Length: 147
Image 1 (cartoon, rainbow, N blue to C red):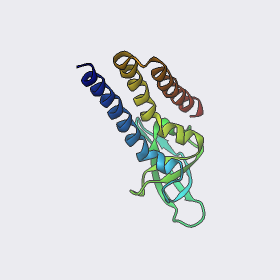
Image 2: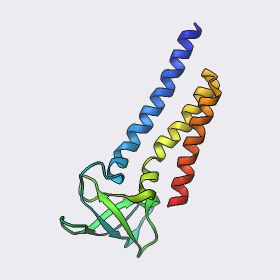
Image 3: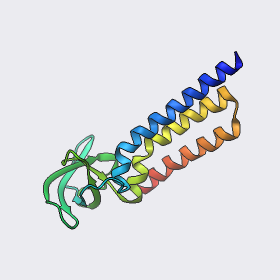
Image 4: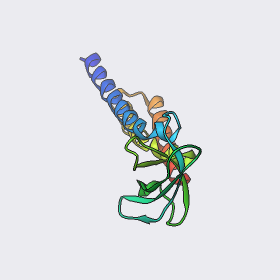
């Protein structure tokens, strides 16, 4: 019975980590430059509750766009320029650089924090849980400081 319980708790922790990693990878691959998309800068013109938008100027080849949008939380104030990579949709951008990469991995950081609670409370692997929790907290603090 103990083996089944530990197996189920390990599976829950693994599912949390995979879900957080999968969610983060959707934006992180563009922020880290793994996916070969257009890179350039956006001058933030306006922001609403969720997204900021502005004109896109490509680096090298590519076409300029009148308006692309990126997440408001990853955007600086209006009038500032930020380096971005375009997602496949073409009108959505992901911030690049250290701030963009850290912001993209925030869902994984949250998954690390949640999984650390399962690992500490259920599996009683306290050192592993501390490592996971501190790593998740460091990612969250790093993203908050970098933005």
